[in-house]
Length: 468
Image (cartoon, rainbow, N blue to C red; front, side, top):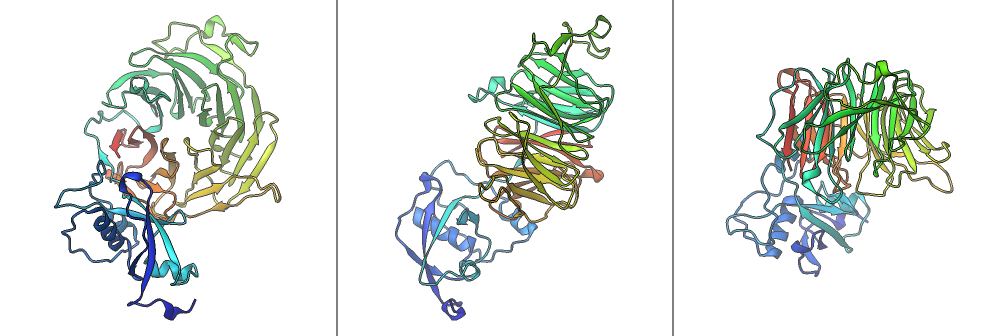
């Protein structure tokens, strides 16, 4: 395609297709200026929807972080197809499942598309900027290192809760709606490294090299330690339950990965603790004996600290990442390695979409990068590579990642720069930046998606909620 085919005065034909049915527009091809960008395309869609447009904004579109965040810094009312006469909807646009972040002309040039072709462009409402919930708790006495949200698969909000792990050694349970502290349990003699939740079970690990299972009754102060998980002689750095809650994976500081059948009470692997160790001294709420549980599987999968573990959707594969720069997939039935991918930086955290069967992983790194990995095993080459599509935006160590359980494209990240960022992994730039814990040089240590919200925690001792 010659460059003369597209110039400032040229027009191209596009087909606009709504991702959401309620915003559907006529299917006819339309001619638009080849230099048109997102704001101009948004005007076109609003015109086709019959929405008023009283703004005189130009068609500029700068793709730096601040402008991109500000571009989303308004409240979109997407509850109906039509808007009031004094407002209009803002839209984002995708071509080949990637967000359009340049002019139509620029995209067609860079992808060698002829000006005579019809470009299919999908659109959807812009993401709403997260707003801080005003029901925050008082600051906790120490850093909050980990968060885990549980909600009943049937979306029964009465069975939802948020668990936090704190450097004071206590696990705390919050009502995710009101953010009130429902109960707490001082169960570790030193700082907690990780927490994970599944139904009525909460797992916690600490620098005291203890890995514990607690039982929680929703809506009550009933939180007791029931199992002490054995196998590792080092600090457990990362935890994850399988989707059905029957298995727990744990990765330790020395590269070991342990898998436990947490429903194995009464089996030979579970025994009554000695009478001298029935209850931990700090377990003031426990009224039953704590049992020991040996691992179902244990393997040294990495050379050094395992910073993230997560099960596949079918619980047949375990993914792990480590400070040894690698990401691995292991077959749980055979314990054989399926795939090992090597990066060039320490991996600090790991996340996988929960609502998708796609083998996509996200890892965080100390150089402020977030990498996306395609874990599908090619039957011909038996290899895969990572696709680093997210442009560095944080200014510090990535501490945690979390995918939206209802949308496999939405990702949130926390960093030592004190910020939380929200992403759509089809776009290289973050959708929004939240100044969550950066006051007085604070660090954001944990981030977790809830139901239509994001939770974050950090060195300021605060657990915060952000409505999305």
